[in-house]
Structure formats: C-alpha cells, structure tokens
Image (cartoon, rainbow, N blue to C red; front, side, top):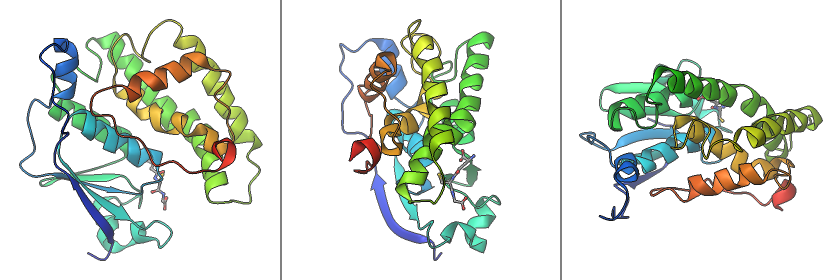
Length: 242
Ligand SMILES: N[C@@H](CCC(=O)N[C@@H](CS)C(=O)NCC(=O)O)C(=O)O
C-alpha cells in the first residue's frame, strides 16, 4: 500500500504490574487475551481521535503497530484506505481479519474483546448508558468545541475560533461540576468515556482554551496520566501552550 509513511511497533508496556497493586487496577491494565499479532492502528499523530485509540491499546497492554497516514497528502482518500473506511478518516484498526473504524467504535471493540468483563465499559445498565452519553459528548461538543478550536490554530485555518472556544468552555463547565461528584466521568473507575474525552481536553490550551478555571478537570487529566500504561499525545507549542 502507498499510504504508510512510518511504522512503529509497540510490543507491550514494559511497566510490570506490582503484586501490591490493587486487583481492580491490575485487571484494568492486563488484557484478558492477546491478539495473535500486533493490532495495526492507522493514525495521524496530531489527531486526538487517533490518540484515544493508541491510549486505550496501551492501557490494555495490547501490542500495536502504528501506521502513520499522511492526511495533508489525502492518503485517507485512496482506494486502499477507503476499502477500510468508506468515510476516508482515521483512526482505523486491523485486528487480524477484523477491521474497525471510528474512534469510539474502536474503544468499544477493544474494551469488549481485550478487557475483563465490566472493566472500561461500565458494569451495569445505568453505568453503560452513562458511558454512552459521554461517548456522544466526545463525538459532539468535544469535537466541535476544543478539538475544532485546536484544529483552527494548528492548521492556521481562516476561521473565527470564537464559537468553538465558547463551546469548549460550555463543555468544561459541565465537566468541572460533574467531576466534583466523582473521580472519573462515570463513577470511581476509569472507563472508555474518560479515554474518549481525554486527548482533546488535555491539548485544549493549544486551541486557546484556558484550563486554569477548571481544577477538577485538571485533576481528572492527572488521574488519567497516572494510569499504568499511559502514553501522552504529541504536543505543539501553539495557542496558550506556546
Ligand atoms: N467520527 C470519527 C471522526 C474521525 C476524524 O474526524 N478523523 C479526522 C482526523 S482527527 C480525519 O481523518 N480527517 C481527514 C478527513 O476527514 O479527510 C471518529 O471518531 O473516528
């Protein structure tokens, strides 16, 4: 295929799981099964949609082969790529013969296939519904708020960012109040709801979205960053992060 620029393979996290670690935490970082070969992740490094998938794979300690797709060169619109995702977007994963596209769909797939039952997805109907609600936020207000504000800045788009920045603060105000009640977006353990929302909130300052007024949100970012297997998203010295 013509669409690969760089390929990197992360076999497994090197961080051992301590015997003293609480069982719950150990379960969250150990895949219940391993794929026969590394999962291929077609991604663009600056994309938070792609980072959320890379982060989930790393937290689950599932081996991954990172395949960089040159979005500015439209590599995502080639017939080969469109055969994997007719929408012509990253991320896409290939797990053996299984191809899955859409970042949130991939999170559901990975947690269902590779995490212990109940971990990462919510363990009862109410929790599962709440997780789904935050996935919708990630595909809605997050994408058209902080993610869009950052894209405008990152790619110097000739678009007024004010509306996207305002949506970002609307979302952050809700998250700030929500996180006063619980450590994670759904309950006291991390779920894919946190992973879906983490990357673009963490990099929101690059889009001139100030996180200073949101101490609970910043503490939540810190809790995710402290999870065993955490991998950061690439950062850019732009906006408030310059
Ligand atoms: N709903 C999709 C959105 C993915 C998306 O917006 N991908 C962007 C990169 S962040 C992309 O591939 N853009 C290139 C294009 O649309 O041509 C998902 O969650 O995976």
